[in-house]
Length: 243
Image (cartoon, rainbow, N blue to C red):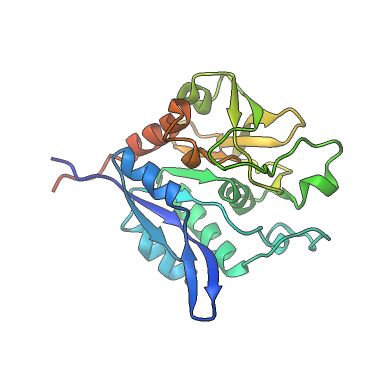
C-alpha cells in the first residue's frame, strides 16, 4: 500500500495586526490537493537551506500566489507601479525551483508561482500590465476569485492541452504582473488575447513542470478541466515508496 503523496505549498505573508502575522496560503490550495488524493503541507520561507531540507518531505511542490517578485532578481530597477515585495521569499522559492528541476520533483506553479519559476531560470517580468502593456484586457478581476473572466488559448502540442482538453478555456485572473522574456528552458503554452503569457511548461517532456498565470485551485471544485490539473499533477507525485 502506497502512502498519499505529500505536496509542499509555498507560503505567502499576511499581517492581521501587531500580534498576528506569518505564513499564509489561501485555503483553496490545500482543499484542491486534499480533494485529489494529496496531503498538503505549508512551506514557510525561512532561508534557502531550511527550504531544501523541507523539500525532503515532499513528493511534489506548488508555488503559490502572493506578493510581487523583486525586480533585482531579474536585473531591473523597480518601476512606479510595482507592488509590495519580499526578497527573502523570492530567494527561498528560487532555491526551491532549482532543487526541483535538479531532482525531478513535480512542480505546479500558480500566478506569482509561474513568475518566480521564470525568474529562477533567467527570465524577466512585466512589472505592471496596466501601465506597461498597450491595450491590455482586465487581468485583475473585480468579482469572486472562483469565477472565470477571460479566455486563454492553449497550444495543442502541450501537456496543458492534454490535461485541460480544450484549445480555448475560460480562466479567472488576479494579477498585475506577468512573464515578459521567457527563460530558455521553458516554453509558452498559453496566452490571453492581449498577448500576455498565461502558461509555460518545461522543455523537458519527462518532467512535470507546469506554470499557469490564473488560479485553478479556486475553480477546481466546480470546474472539471481545472480540477484535472491537480489530478494530473498529483498523479505525477505518486511515485513514492510503500510503507
